[in-house]
Amino acid sequence: MSRLIEIALGIVTGIGGFLEAGSLATAAQAGSEFRYDLIWAVIVGAVCLAFLVEMSGRLSAISKHTIPDALRERFGIRFFAVALIIMELVMFMVMATELGGVAIALEFASGVSYRWWALPVGFVAWILLWKGTFGLIEKGVSVLGLITLAFVVGAIHLHPPLAEVARGAVPRLPAHDHARYWFLAVSILGASISPYLFAFYSAGAVEDKWDVSHLTINRITAGFGMGFGGIVAIGALILAAIVLHPLDVQVDSFAQLPLLLTSAFGRVGFALFVCSLAIACFGAAQEIALTAAYMLAQGLGWRWSENLPPAEDARFSLAYTILIPLAAVPAAAGVDILKLTNISMVLSAASLPVIVAPLLILMNDRRYVRDYGNGWFSNTVVALITALAFVLAVVSFPLLIKGGG
Amino acid sequence: MLLVHDVLDKQLTDRHGVRMGKADGLVMLQEGDGPPRVVSIEVGSLTLARRLGRRLGRWATALARRWGGKHTESYRIPWTLVRGITLEIAVDVDAEATRVNVVEDWLRVHVVEHLPGGRP
Picture 1: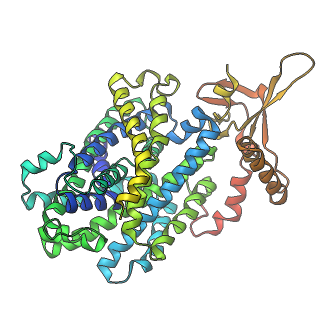
Picture 2: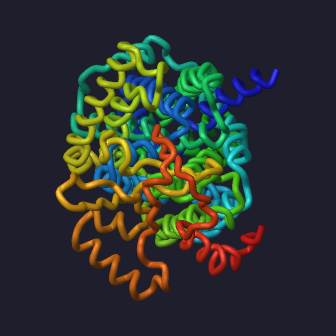
């Protein structure tokens, strides 16, 4: 019975944890500007994510070492130092985005500007990490995150043209605005294949004391969870294509996004949107804050666990204590959250090789994965993802300049 | 055994299996004409800083001398206490009895316990 609950929770984690400010905003932009044409990018993102998450979980279940551990141990301090700096920078940007997303949701709900909400939101995020345990945060975020299924229900409710949706699942060249099209494709991939997620997931496997017996649930969580999670993002994209595209609205602020759900559900839709945005972004902010602290602690050999009281792992706890208020500053200072979102997602895509390329080596290192290493199929897939990651890293900045506006 | 590949940067665990940092550095000794041999493993951020670059090392050393109190140098674990090397290096010491956690302890006493809910 407890196995069934674990599997259910795994799936819930995938669905509830998938959507955050980045995937929501980029999906809405894609739908409003290119209708269904970019659905393939969400699918590619979700499939890559599923494979990489499964590998992260397997690596940690077998070796009891996390990805940051392995980056330091296997590739040495120099490589780790570079990876650490890049990852911390990206995580800081994404966390600032997510805290901004929660603040905007609260602005929609209260009428009080998001700038005033940023620091209080950061404080609540901190106190939950300070007092809470890993299980509480992981499960709380996931279960509440199920509210984002409203995007799927809404999309079905508005009867999208299924043939066109299906055609969008196949990559093709755009009819107009090439730079913008590829910029959004890269943003979507960056939003789905977030490098911090692998470090978080692998730390979670160690926090939850996974071993060989968890490999099945790991596979189910990765496959179904990320699959369903991708469907939520596709739901948001379809809604944007139906609701925003005919109005000729180019999404240039979060204020346009509640329309996605009000068209389907009326007034209730507004509340659903506000809750979805707040919960999804808050959950992501917590995961990132933890991951930023995990990365430092694991790589430098500090004591760490979200399940210990802060006094037992002072450096780890102080790491997120310092980081969270800093990440709340951009929103408090009135930075445009949508612009911040787009930049963070591109940076996120650009930083992918730092995690993905080492994973290819680690998943074939018998000292880490023993007899549970990658087969030829997984190796081919992760090699392809690595190639994709390098392409994304190279094209992201030129595209940000040409297509970001 | 390859020192850089199998020892350097690996996770250290004490005799109770508790994580006690990474192998941040190695101390080698050359006596007479014989080949150099490893005498101890170093644990500490100063060692780490020195490995990352000469300037960073000097800067960290100066900083530690100024603010670090009496335990600035990295902690050395004698090689004779190494019990096994797998993915982790098991050493026969009690982490609690060493000073690998001085920074951790200092932060707990001076910062964490002053924050709300920081006292367990």
